[in-house]
Length: 469
Image (cartoon, rainbow, N blue to C red; front, side, top):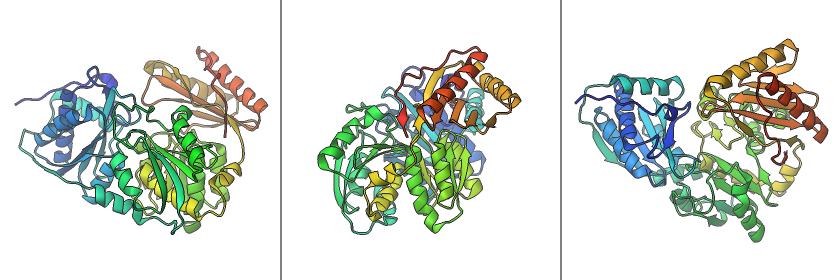
């Protein structure tokens, strides 16, 4: 039976395949991904593809079509069922699978879904996703063959491995968890039985409609319920997950939010005690405070491009034991496998808090204060966004500015820094500025606005609250 399939072009993203269910993403797309990715694995001499899915209402039917497509390419499919994205990564590593596909919409609205992939234990992204689309459209797949399928339950093994690195002793912390109705629910319920302490779980039920709040812990509004419960129970810490549990949110005992870079400071100090001089990676959106604190703790800070696949690849290249992003992706290669896992990051962070002789808020409050804008996203056509960055970069270089071009433009001045980059996943530009003072932040916003206007774009809306950071 001949096979060809063209994807909606908006669904083929930099790091995954993603779309609106029933509009830009259908079961036929899932079958085509299985058929084409299975062919890529087979042509590399591989055999096994591990498949899992999240708690969204559309995920079971998409997973079923995905499995059928992979089986038609003659591979062995191992189904790990409904669970967190990092559990799929764990299965892929421990089973030494040749490929892995997770059906997940991550932190997107309930009507979205998508697919994250690994090939030969490495992220499958960028040009590889484009190639998959081209192979599918051309019908360039291996001849149809009957694969084999088996289902395994790896949850207990995953939980056992998570708690293996618990290093907080017997101190009983008071912890509030906001599962956010994410797919981590069942795993989390087992995990808390094995960590000392008094654990309260909010929104523990897996529910793809996300009735309590949107499953994105980087948005302060989504942490309000967690903050209230931490205050009510006088907890030591609060922890939240995104929809597929590969990103973490944290609040301290005072209910103050720790953003991704602040979480990474605390984790980095701990890792660097055992691994002095190690390279710690953070994305270009992170605070200068983070890079300074890594250096102070005896580490080698490395600023890198935003994107979980890009960070993972850089970690492998530099033998970095720890990396993180502002978005709450935390990657441990210290005792762990180098992939982003909010549950594992939580275990490591709780161990640190259990060993502290002061509250977590004391550690957070001791970090240098800066004043920053939220992450600002504004529309810019895909055909224009990268050209704007090139124009701004050229002008800045001509003016002799202190600028990093790792990912967009990040400009350092005496007042702080500002960033402008093109999103890899949407038709938007992303901006952020961090000042040492209120006046300094205003100077940075003015400089950013001037550059945008010179490229014919309106200034971003800075009206969102400044984040004390």
